[in-house]
Length: 488
Image 1 (cartoon, rainbow, N blue to C red):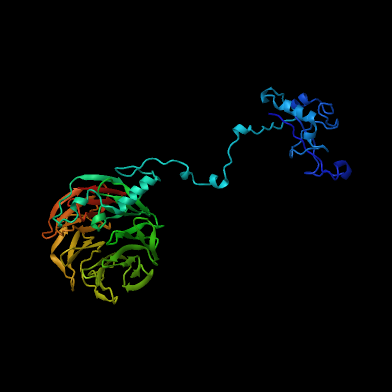
Image 2: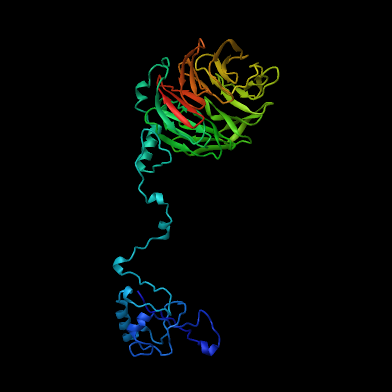
């Protein structure tokens, strides 16, 4: 709708008196031809405007008034403006001499928008949009739910006992049964999954940990729904290794960003974060003192940290380039490290046994074959441990000095081919499971070392397998494409 735009001169001096064109002080009057039609020509008695004020095509600066008396004291002008403003905008003729667009008046008070504070406008949109429902039966890629109900449900599942696990609590550990069919299939990560591990605490053993090259660690409800309950994104580099604390309330993760982080599982917050001077590829919590942990990686050193003080307490130095895995032996006074150091005629320093308290080498002549050992595993009952080798077999050693190898038993049939293939014993100790670069999972009898079952699990290399500590026939596997499967 058209309207009058009235602008004024400064009271002190006019343009004619000063002789200068002072922009911002000297103004002109402009009007639309349609308003002029209803108000009368300039100088008429209907308006009382001076005759020398002609309509010019100048830019309006503001609704200032050029009259000595204010407009509300001129009833004829006010009545004429009211009459003109009641005309519909489309019926007003256009003035070619004034091409400036006609400004619209503010709406009536009935249609005025409520004032929205700037702080509310800048608030995150997630707070104003109602989220969708939570997803059960497995995660959906690229979706997220922020409802209070789903968060509370996930928090409860991180601390409460699963209904599937409850009937098996308190029972005597029996012989592990062989899993044969896929129960859940999860496209869990955007990069290769380096490890999966069930929570060792029986009452929360339904929780499954996964660490990936996509820089995240995730906690899953692996026993029932397959939901992702927690995503831990504390690292800026690929997460190479992760493990549970014995109580199941914390997890330790190591990354290529040179950090190792101890995280609270229920809240997802950092408890301790320590920085090494090398990329971390392997970790080990001291079982009876979980506040102390070891870090190894692309360095000739293994460092021991105390989470209570966030300080490094010990350093173990060896003439190697990289530590592949760390394993505490029974008694926890000694531990074994696996390295990538292989000499020409023997595997000197391939496996090194250390005294935890004195940082002294106990033995570095344990394994005498020219193969590196990407992973280690301790038997739950016997005084023995095994080492996965790049010779496509698993060797078994005594966990007591002098850590002799058992040359009459080895577990063969799977392939390693340069992958960090992990192996693990069942809780009863009767089975040994290993992944394979072919995507299969091989189950061996511990005593006879013969193959009991071969499971075609993945299309890509299966790098980790974890046997459930409570459920008798449940296992979790992961592969190099980011896929996780639950078997029973």
